[in-house]
Amino acid sequence: MKKITLLLALSIISIGAFAQETLSHSVSQTSAGGGVACASDPDETAGSGDEGVSDNIFYRSYTPSDFDFTGDFEAMGVGFVARFVDVGGSNPTVTNTVRLFTTTGTFPNGTLTEVASQDFDVSAADDGELFEVMFDTPFIVDSSTELIVAVDIQASPELPNNYDFRIGVNDAGQDAPSYLSSEACGLTSPGTFAAINFPDNHLILNLIGDTNLNTDDFLLSQISVYPNPADNILNVKLPSNLILNDASLHDLLGRDTGVKMSNGSMDVAKLSSGIYILNIETTGGSLSQRVIVE
Image (cartoon, rainbow, N blue to C red; front, top):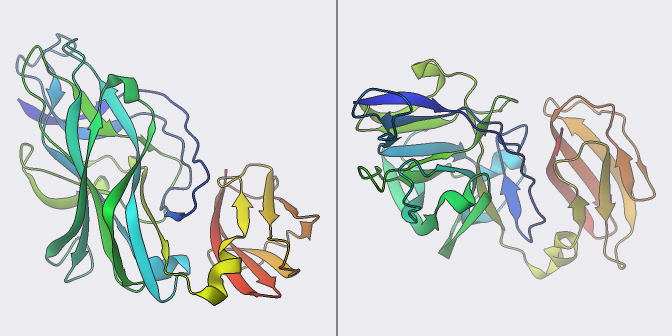
C-alpha cells in the first residue's frame, strides 16, 4: 500500500562556507525531522520491517533576481539534507538524481524543461548530512529566469534491500512553498505540502550558484560574510584593498533594522529569526547579500 507518511528524526546541521552563494527559502537550515513522502508498507503494519520509500520528487523554485542577483546567473548545484533509514538491514547504497528545470509558466504551472542533472549516492551513513550535489556543467541563465531545483528519489526495492530516503525538513518558516510529486500516491503533478495537509513541512532544498563575475566585480566577490546563518554576531571581512563606506541590514520589507557595523561585525542577537538583506557600500562598489538570523 502506498501512502503519504511522516518520517520522525532529529538532527542539527550547519551550512559551511562556500565560494559560491546558496539561495534558500528556508528560515533555518536545521533539519528537525518530520519529512513527508510517499511510502510503501506492503503488510500495512507499521514497524514490521517491510516499509520503504516510493517514488518521490521534491521541488523548490528560485528566481535569482529575487535574491538581488543581476545579469547572468550560473546555477552550479543543489543543496539539501539527507534523511536515510536502512529499514531492511542490508546497508544499501543507492543512486538518486538532482535536477534543474526551467518552466514556461510560473511554477508549478507551465511545462518543465530539464536543463541540468547530476546523480549522487546515498546510504544510512549519510543520514542527517548536508549534501551539495554540483552539476558537471553549470547552467548559465539570466537572473530573472525562474529555476526549479528537484531531488528525484527512486522507489525502494522490497526486502531485504528496502530503505527510506527523504529530504530533511523543519517547521521554522519559509518564504516560498515547497512541492512534492509521486506517481505511486497519485500526486501526478507538483503540489504543495499544505495541499496534502502537511503545511509545516518546510523542505531544506537550496540552489547553489553565483553571477558571472567580470574583472570589476572580482574584489566585491572576495567579501566574506559569516556565519550565515548567524545567531549572535555577523562578521564582514573585506579584502585589504577595499574600504568600507557603509553597511546596513534590512528586513524583507525594506525596513532598516538599525543594526550598525562595528569593527567588522554586526550584533544581530536581538533581531527576530528570519531572512534579512545586508547592504555593503565600499570604495569598489556595492554588494547586497541575503543573511539568515536564527
